[in-house]
Image 1: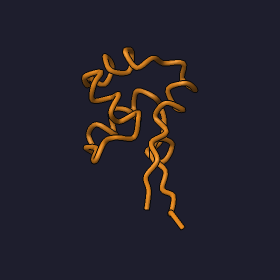
Image 2: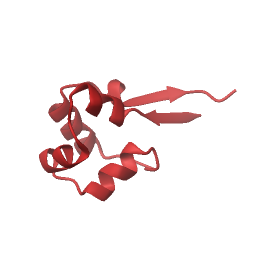
Image 3: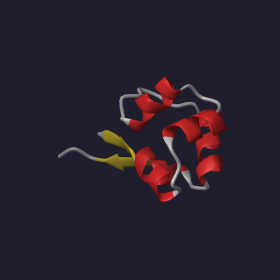
Image 4: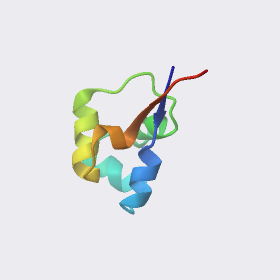
Length: 69
């Protein structure tokens, strides 16, 4: 099982930089970068909610499940 993080795709669609998103969701650049690169082991619902609010998207636009076969 694999979860793919498409945060960079949504940021590009909204023409938003990592710095701008970091300021608007009140997260450090380092933590957002870890999430964006898919290296995060978990995400808080409150963080996901903030990101979705700022990017005007749904959680499924950011997180994607794929099965490894």
